[in-house]
Length: 210
Ligand code: SF4
Image 1 (cartoon, rainbow, N blue to C red):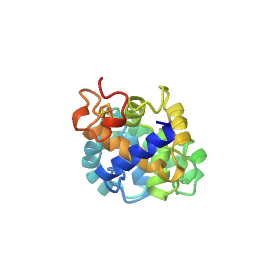
Image 2: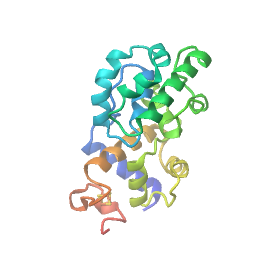
Image 3: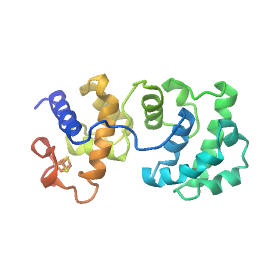
Image 4: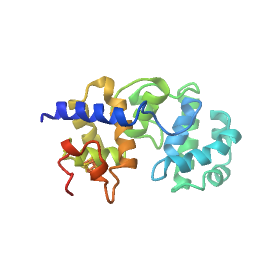
């Protein structure tokens, strides 16, 4: 099967299983989504949502993150991995957004990539989920693993994997593909012991016997 056809079939089957794919991270503003996405690296969405439930009550505006003492912010996010670096990135991103971007989270990939702690994955998540702008495909650990297992890429580097997926997926499905693969990676195509037998992609997956 050609890769374009295969990916169209993957999207069709996964949409049947997971209707209305969207990020599981809770947020009310683009900056809250930025905070949640930075916090989510190497942590689960459930952990982040639990933390942001109280964090977002204490820090109500970008200014609150920029003017807090770094030690206090680090303490407030200390329930997730790498909290010291994440707090520093959040605070520096807040300062940069206030100084350089008129207190608004930027809406372009190039500008988002200037923010501390933001690489293409995070930028894609912000653009598509906060602004409805599709510039690429967010490649996290699940998307990487599934794209490889499904034979959609041979690359290891997330930026190259994103390019491979963009070439074979219609642009209107870029955001959906990322969400769907993440959901399927969490529910069925687990990193260890993937549940091949109950997988809707079984018939078109070259890794079903691993
Ligand atoms: S058949 Fe197995 S390896 Fe392929 S997508 Fe499904 S769970 Fe993953």
